[in-house]
Length: 151
Image (cartoon, rainbow, N blue to C red; front, side, top):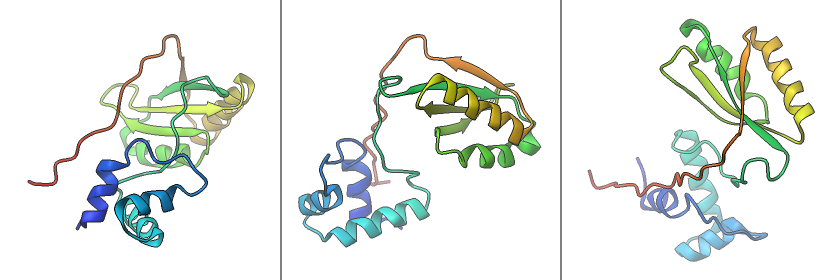
């Protein structure tokens, strides 16, 4: 069950988390609660799988290099392959699509050579080939959503 603090954190801090040495204290101050309460609430949201991570989003290829990658994985291996992919710190996010290429993810690395090395290791670890889809044009999509908790 979501508390009012959980709901505020989900709605108000999808974007614009304070960029400071004490971001969680800053959030706590803005909400009138203790920093420990904010940290506990974020941990609970993560444990309940409402959030996967808290972190910055940097424009593609501004620092290092990145690419969209797709894989065609048999349905009965999809979960185990996704778990392997998720172990790599270079994976920004991944998701399943209803397509022949059913596992998609974004890789970020310090340079093209490192990116290729990670992809080669992933292919070795999973046993499946990857479709490398480098960025050709950059589009911004705002992924912040106003959540309605009144239903």
